[in-house]
Image (cartoon, rainbow, N blue to C red; front, side):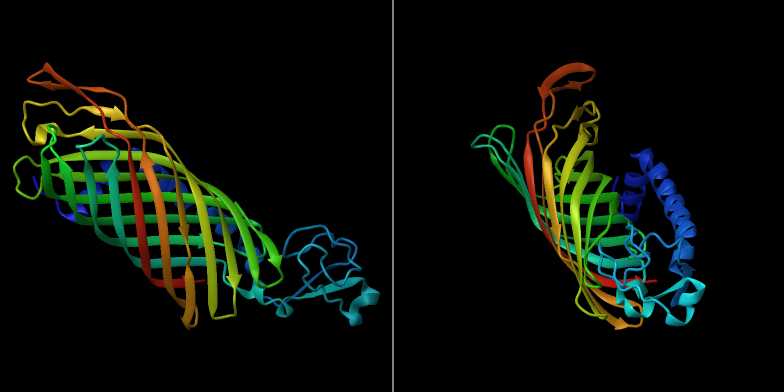
Length: 356
């Protein structure tokens, strides 16, 4: 039975992976809780006063600072004493002198995503199995990157769907060309800690996270001779560094690079879609370390709305699965496995960023 894009997305995200329900609910509750907890720190007041003797930490980087110092020794922010109140033992911190303190901590990106998908299974000659083509989709992300508290967070959802060109061979080595329908769904959440390298201009954020990716691969769609699907899924943990450069008030450049550690990979081959006599064997995918780098560019076009352009590259792959049994009419038919593979993706996200 043919499924449209929305039906496929619903099936992938809510039926095949119950984990996503819990992750989505927990993430929403977490971000709302953090926002409510830290909201007093985002006050737009430009003149904050604190007792002279009690002032022991820089309000921007949270490092210890002596109240008689004019500048923070860690982030170089200026702490301006108010001469009129010195007899009252008060200190005034002029936030107007620090542009970075006025930036909005919340960044919501909504964009169109398109990329080249270059997939190749590692098989001995003359066998081969490759996929190549452009895949479009949607990309949604929320980034929390306040300059007044060290905590940083990111949450993203991505869905893409398109046909790619299959170039491979049959099980007997006969060349075969066809079209494959691919559906990808990715969910990811990251947390990090911010370091200010240069006052008002550079922010360095090491981070870790967890994500889940699902790939529904529809084979044999060209001539409809034996259409069947393969369901891939795996978790991954990104470990990376995000560096934000505030060029000026209208232009922001970010360099984001992460190593992705894959785990809990699975595959299900729905052979019964081609012939009801077959079973639908499942296997455990081997883990392979991946890598992703992106260069988000934000340019202000109106008030708190930015044009968002994100070129990116990702390398990923899987190792050979375990051997699993294929049956026909409940009788053993063959032993099989999913071969190792590598994937290169070259993409561009184009959309808008709303900061608040």
